[in-house]
Image (cartoon, rainbow, N blue to C red; front, side, top):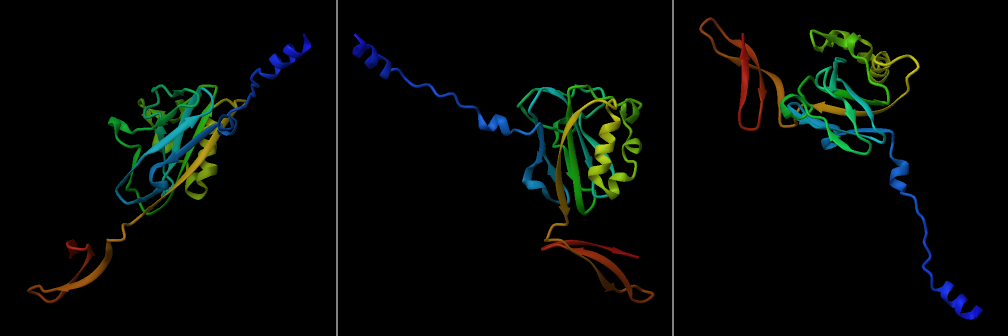
Length: 208
């Protein structure tokens, strides 16, 4: 009697419960760029973000000159609520990539912040649009991360919690552009000089 029961139990499948290691190690919020954040002047930069929990997302960018702009939401009144675990491409106006790397050469910084409490943008809005002067208080030019964090803190109540992530990018002049260089050219009143930028097969020059 006991032997058949023992044999029956020994053939029962063993079920092992395993947690999802990926879900456990997902950061609260993650922001990243295409091309590993390395751009030539004029390149289109794509920005992506994902939050581990449903909440409200805001993404700010400090360019190499220290000017701060809002990547997401595009307009202050846009819906900035995101779903847990969903990857978002943060497009610019008209469905274009988030921004063009055409400001200057140097390093730029992005900050993504997510909170369960809606952000308050009134302080940074003028005539229904983002107020770039209010966003760019000068701190981001010296310390981009500290400046962007301070701006996000002003968007929430003092006791509100938020999680954040940084991403950086580099904008540089294409290697196939050289210059400027001086060159002489004749004029009826005597030799003159100008400056030009050289390309592999063509270029342009400025005279005075």
